Amino acid sequence: MLSAFLLLTGCAPLAYYLQAAGGQMEVSGKAVPITDVLADPATDPELARRLAVVLAAREFASRELKLPDNDSFRRYADLGRRYAVWNVFAAPEFSLKLLEWCFPVAGCVAYRGYFSEAAAQAAAAELTAAGFDVFVAGIPTYSTLGWFADPVLNTFIRYPEGELVGLIFHELAHQTVYLPGDTAFNESFATAVEEAGVRRWFARQPDSSPARAWEETRQRRQDFHALLFRIRDQLARAFAEAADEADARARKAAILRAAEAEYEGLRASWGGYSGYDHWFRSSPLNTAKLASATLYLDHLPAFRTLLGCLDGDLPAFYEAARGLAKLPASKRNSLLAGLAGGERCVVLTPSGATPIMGGMTSSLSSTP
Image (cartoon, one colour):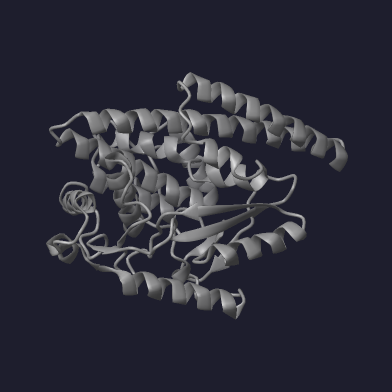
C-alpha cells in the first residue's frame, strides 16, 4: 500500500492533503528506534520478542533477499488504533473496474487513503450517494516508497511470524520496483517477493511449526481468493449478458446471494476456520469489495512463473520486473498473461528484439 502522504499534489480538495500530511507526521513523530524499545525494561516481553524477530527479518531482507538496506522497519510506533489508514474503494454498480485517483508521485491508484476512519466513511458516503458501490478497508500499514523510513506499527506487530516478516518483505519490495498507475502490477510483484522471502526465512529457522502454520494460512488465502475470482467472473458475465439495468441488478443480487452459501461451504472445508468472516460479513458484498480484493492478485501467477524461470534469482527477478514496467501497458499485460498461462519465460523490449531480463537461465531465449 502507498502512503496518503505521497498524494500531496493533484486535484483533490485541500482538506484531503492536510489530513494526509498530518497523518504521516503523526506516524513519523511516534516512531522510536526498536533498539531503544528493546533496551527499555518496561517493554512488554512479548512485544520485545516480536521486535527482535523484526530486526532479524529486516537484516535478512537486505542480506538474503537483496531488498533495500535503509532505515525502514528499524523503528516502532504505537498509533493507539487498529489500523494505520483506511482505504476507500468505489466501482460502478454494474462494473468491476475500480475508480482511480491520479497523483504525480504515485500515479493512478484504485483507492483513496485516509488516516481517519471517520473521514474515510464520510468520503464513502459521498460516493454511495453518487450511485457507486463502495468499500472501506482498514489497512495495517503502507509504503512511502522509501521517501520516509517506514516504521513497524502496533497495527501488525502481533501478526503470526510468517505474516509479520512477510509484510516487511512486501513493503520493502514496493521500494525496489514500483510502476506508477498500475496497482495490480505493484501488488502482485510485492506478493511474489513476500512469498519467496517467507519461504527462505523459514528455511533458516530451527522450529518448523511457524512455517507449517504459514503454509496453512497461505493455502486458505488461495482458496478464498479463488472463490472471489469465481464470483467476480460470474458478475462480469452477468453484466455483459444482461438485457438492461433491471436484469443486471437481478442477476447481480442472485450471484451475491449464492456467494454467501459458497463461502459457508469453503469455511466448512477448513474445519470451521473463521478468519475471513469479518471480511465477508462486516459490510455488504458488492463490486467495489470484490474488485479491491482481486485486483491485487491479478498478476501473481505470472510473477511466480517469472521467478521460477529465473531459478529463484531475486536480483534478476527485480531487474526483469523493472524491464516489464518500462513496456507499454498492452505489451506488458500480454506478456504477463503469457507467463500466467505458462506459455513463455521471456520478456522483450518495446522493439521486440532484445531480452530485458538479466540473469536468465540458459533455457530462456528471446522470441520475436
